Length: 274
Length: 305
Image (cartoon, rainbow over all chains, first blue to last red; front, side, top):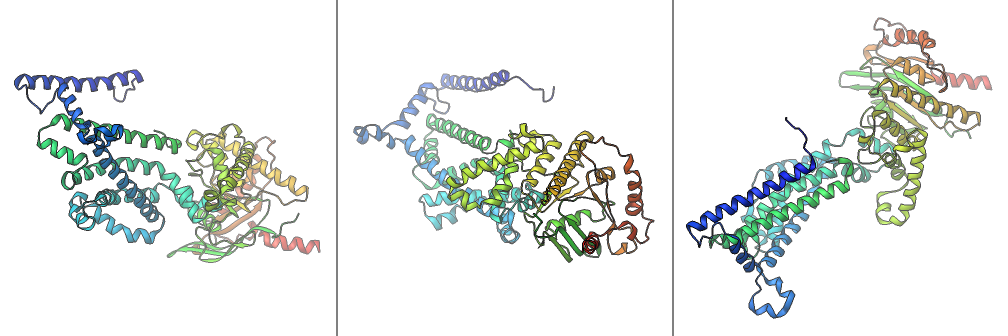
């Protein structure tokens, strides 16, 4: 039956079954490949993954004596710090910029008229195509990655916030706030922002994927530390035991951010429902 | 204590038009404190335009509107509003919705952000006051519910409490019960009658009546039942080409919330309203149906002197 509901237990069992199917299919493929070529590294087996993990977490010999803090010099720690540091800074800058401009556009028609043409134009240019421009302006330091992510998500996110501020809040709700004694700032903060907050969080969730694409692409080309760089080097060497581990880490952290933002939306806007 | 201004609302020779379309034509109206006034009229006659002009969101092209002596050019806390739809803030619970106006009116955004230690005790007081108003409209048990968790009737009760807690000089109700079922309509109509009874009690104590309400409705029975004065706004008059004006203005019988609902006594007034307001053929002079309160007040002053 179409849209027939299922029990929570069935849902969990089916979810686990899909993961088990993926692992089983991979194990079978890997096994077959290693029967043909025991040294194959394109579909690594468990012991190769163990080697890959060891390589990722190996501390350079000169630093071993420094104890726990020396782990900061292993590939995994360095790449995690570099990539997610860039991602957070870029996302935070992009979200703040989009919030200010999007809300101002949704509330004030002169600002809307001023920003709509450039935003519509820049939204059509793929941010990775702008890499050369950012490279010329910001060099290859962290500013490049922050600008790439922030300005990459800005046109889409600002337009989404602007549309929500303009269309999701009825003029009745705004007029009524004035009859209750609100100032202009209170209408923006206590009515419009509160009303569209769940939509803002949803749109930030949607922008994490594109932000990650921009970042990995830039790291692939322009840096010597980070997930993008490591994936490029290791895939060139066909060290898929490292590549797959990085892909899993990217998937898990992406899922974690998504879950955290969903949680934030439920906590901050319980009225919005699922 | 007598009010510092005699009239809750004064509309003085108001005209409004959209391009070549003339909507309101020389509307003059006085509403003293404590009246519950119903406005009826044919569809498209300009009831909403008049309401928006009084609210201040769409000031009239010509003429003036004063709420408690203050010129209305933008929405202010002097004039409250309850709409048929979108009456509540979805992101606030019932008690937060009612306390919302108290927060906006009594504190500023910088105050709340920069001195939260002063704001929180005030907030507790606001929520307590909101609970009292929710009790008044019979929703004491629903204070923690969000609007989407309430029925249409409950939402409108909260919206009325939200507006009344501000003690506006006049409260506008824009077809507030239009989307409700018959039983819920009756409950809310009786709630308005109770407010009128509170006005009467205040008057008998020599105090200013607390509730002045202007209700726009399509339902003639409702108009006569809940109000003590009925206004008819219509384009069907001698100067109809120039827009709608008030063609009917008479007192309505006052009912008690405890009385049985019996619409039989309304029959004669309903027929009179139909003829004066809704009949396109009736283009005679409407003076016999209209009693401007300004004249009545002047007469009463002369009488007393």
